[in-house]
Amino acid sequence: VMKKGDVIEASIEVENISRIDGIETIQMYIRDVTGSVVRPVKELKGFQKIELRSGERKKVCFRITEELLRFNTKDMRFESEPGRFIVMVGKNSVETESAEFVLEV
Image (cartoon, rainbow, N blue to C red):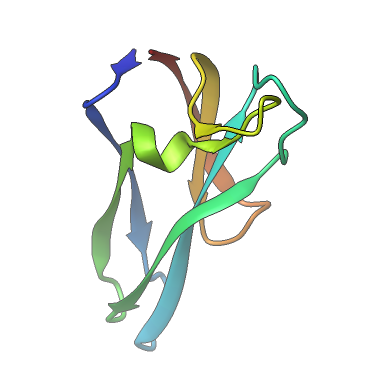
């Protein structure tokens, strides 16, 4: 459960299983399940480009604040609304790990 002023963290472990060093872009998407208007199924809210040596593992973290959840509501006010959200983190919009949280305003 997240309240105004809170910060929650979404993270994922990334590993380079190849024999060569590489660069990966990790993306974070958020879905507002209960918004008063139709919202995107996956809305890109952050990304990080990381370098990984062969065999290296890294934890990639994203901060989620109430401000990040704001949108133009049905009353045309830019604000967040209480309800369920799904956060998805991965290397693209299809291959993600997900978790759910609730915003209480």
